[in-house]
Length: 227
Image (cartoon, rainbow, N blue to C red; front, side, top):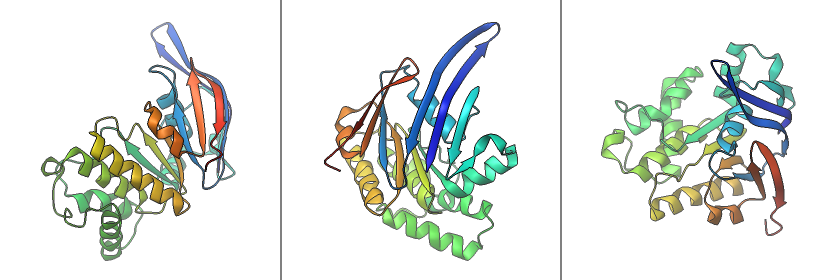
């Protein structure tokens, strides 16, 4: 489903350079649930942003579903992300002036899905994450957990091939975190490929594979035999 080869990312600040990723080889199979872990500054979020096409690597190769993303034009990458990938961020990234259903429906409309059908899909996705009672609420009228579940609904509404999540429980209390993780578990049971960055050790056990980063390199890759 996704493969990286010798992935490097360097950030420049004037003449100073900081190499955050130092040649990462990685492979995720269709339907896998992979957790990426590491201390703060290890490069895990940067790694997620490169392979999810939200940022451009300095060098190396990224293939998603057999397609070499290096050959894609910027507008092709935008369309590819829109139709093949789903994203969940720790800060929810919801538009504050839109209701829950409007936040979920917006990416669907950007894919030229008929408005009536798009709203039906959006409501179905919100219902799936337990927010059928929040269709018409704006983010400021929802709890942090509800906002994150709205962002998950937005991410899964178009049935993406890969769901990327960057610290999705970082800003949540224990009860809300559990609700979010339970949704990920259910999505995985339904066959969703998930790659999630987290610093919380308790969530590693639910994944099929645990990748640990340190200083921009993969230092271990563990297969969870319970899964």
